[in-house]
Length: 396
Image (cartoon, rainbow, N blue to C red; front, top):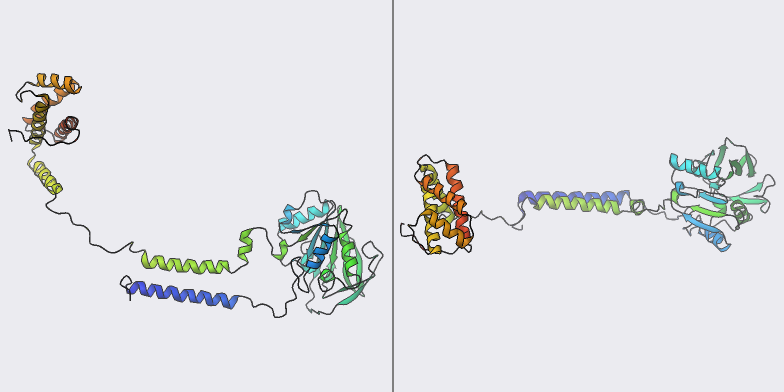
């Protein structure tokens, strides 16, 4: 075992490893297995049998202004005249605000081509239900009435159509067989909704069947006046990077990295480096002497003595700098110092006079003594700015 790991660190590290292995196992267990024979869904990106990439590219080749719509319907054009929104069996439901935006789009003159029961939940005033039994065999449906949408396609084929339920608007049945209605249209404001029971007529595998391509192009309208927005927003292709990442294993990987990071922090953050004994200060240090001497002065209440030491030391140094006798009178000393160093004569005289009185005052207050010592120290620092050593006075 490494020297930097103790027993608690080792147990914590092992526990973090077990949690990480558990998360990896859960990720593997809950990741959906890919379908063995995937047919796809009607996305304009999909090249599979049930994809719709061929129909999208065909519209481009025929001169339609067509684009994949990966934004919220709330961002659809404010002037939808001539615009077509293709909802090819959306995989996700719409919010209330998005449904309101689509209704506004149709009321303003736009067209919605909705396919399947899932699209009926998003299109305005449409109700349909999914058929539980799914049969991959295509069925043929005939045109029920003459219409601009049926004139070039007497018959179409569909795979697994959903069942139309009702609408609050008067709707026109376009294709069906017996009691099954698989295509219809109805007006909403200035716009129109066309509903298909299934998106199979425009899929890669069935668009070439008889009548399917003609019905698809008639539902879109002429290329000269139509602008097509092929919805991929409800297929999961969202415009933001966060929405894309949410559909990948990256969030699980980030969670695992976070657990590992927390484990490392708990393991090593209790100490930031090697453990060392705190440095012990030597009793021979000058600071030790200063502290001891200060304690002695404080316990003896020797405030006058401390002022005397500072005063005599300063006066000796000042006399040497001025080259005058150490026994000279204070006014003479202060006058010479003011002329030599530019000090204020009155302030210096006051400090020195008070210091002489304090030296003889046995009841001197500690605060007053400290103030005088500080003033003498400031004068000394000006006198010896480089901290040069002074000769020891004779009176010591």
